[in-house]
Image 1 (cartoon, each protein chain N blue to C red):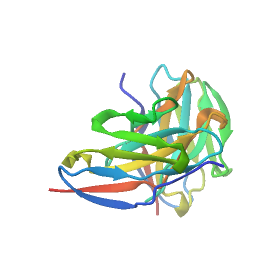
Image 2 (cartoon, helix red, strand yellow; image 1 turned 90 degrees about the vertical axis):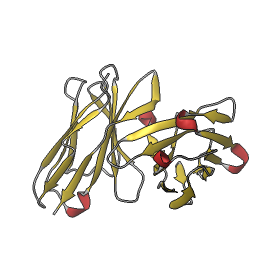
Image 3 (tube, one colour; image 1 turned 90 degrees about the horizontal axis):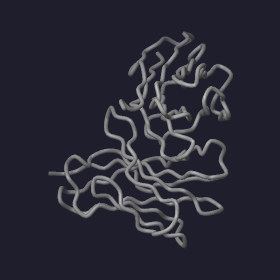
Image 4 (cartoon, rainbow over the protein chains, first blue to last red; image 1 turned 45 degrees about the vertical axis):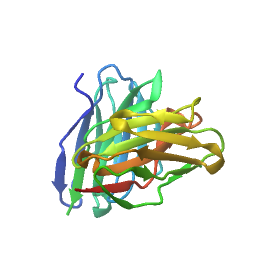
Length: 114
Length: 115
């Protein structure tokens, strides 16, 4: 078990560009979560999947954001037309439906929009 | 809506001294409570959790936390800190009613350890 992995670890992009992040959860976990963490703040929930179904999206997830988990394994988070306010750490977590609160977090992808 | 407050943004403690981090939550029923630690460049690691039962819970790395319903608190303690405990600590609350069992985090407390 290698834990939750995220790629890339760092991304610098110019305003207006599109970016995509990937999350590979712990293999036997069927739930996958995305959180966003801005400097000096705790993580904030964005969205979650159970298997391939996206079951909830936060108000924070504007229409420029889209997340997928096509085969119920890895997930991608895409941000279109990035803005400086999107600069943050994007965290992925996974859990099993039997122990949903035991969420295991990846190292995160730090996005900087210039 | 549930919320979590961590009143202390920074705490500095000497190595070997005791540590207590405060956490207050707002939730209508008995919440599920968690403490996570985040070291620089690392993801969040679960230190301990409270679901029900004994209000004093033990976690990893020598940490413990006590749930006090009357004070809506879940403070984290360690009797003797080590330099490796320097990190940011987050308290979180989960709700069985929240879809997906998402977690709501406090703003965090950064712990600095003096030699």
